[in-house]
Length: 96
Ligand SMILES: [Cu+2]
Image (cartoon, rainbow, N blue to C red; front, side):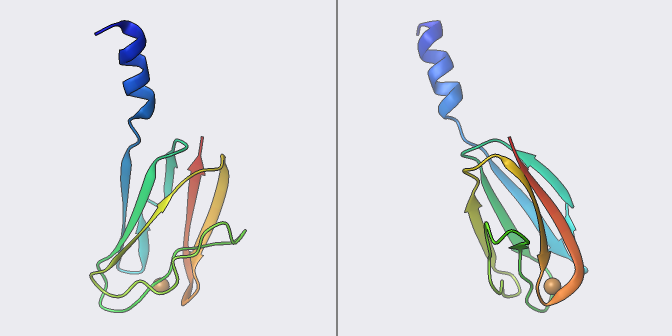
């Protein structure tokens, strides 16, 4: 396989990242991804949470216990987000 083809494969390889919601926290609280990557929030608490960008760029709405919500990051930027049900729960998604 040529170097050009290898580079092409590498560029196309979007990754998937997991953010665990547990004990009223987003873990990790700050996550940096690249454009095209997928971010999955999984709720391991016994009650619903949301991952809602302050800018409204994304909003999971309620994620039930043991459920997850995924989002493909398309636009570069820094996106602070919160749980609209528990205003102390904050995180930041950084898209490069
Ligand atoms: Cu919450």
